[in-house]
Figure (cartoon, helix red, strand yellow):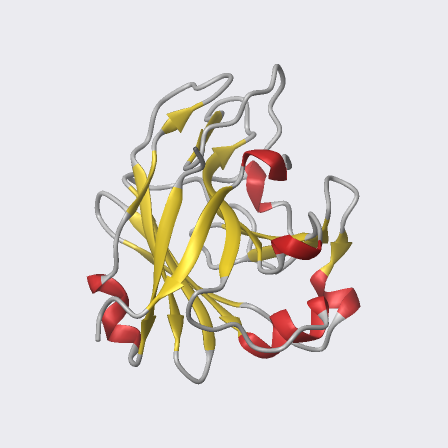
Length: 205
């Protein structure tokens, strides 16, 4: 049975901290160390989707500063989201580092299009660094989803598929951790058949 996460409909971004927590705790392949990571996701009324992700890492690797940089070579947090799974396996990958740099792609697998090349809408990422941890806040406008998928706005009862990751491909810090487990001999997060499910609910009203 797939991991299922309840995506609460919220009226204020402040309510995100009240939403259920998903744990990124499936350690895969080679792990130089084993950082704890977790997050929360919601649908924000009159906006779209918001995802908060945190990693318990002190002084995270953060060399890249520009959007579309290869942030997976830093210490990265990633959200892979298919907002229209009934229509196929096309999904967004949003990959972020502690500088708030974001790499965004769309497609069915590793051969992907850059989001900046297929739509005028953009995801927004902000990051915070604390003494023993760091976090990112990802904002995904509904217009971005509608434009890329060619669908209407999502609402209560709709189901998406998703996976969330903690990663570094730098050999000194290498680790691969997922929310939903993956079965593969080689490091590869781009396997939508292993995504979990998310269902939009009105759980905070």
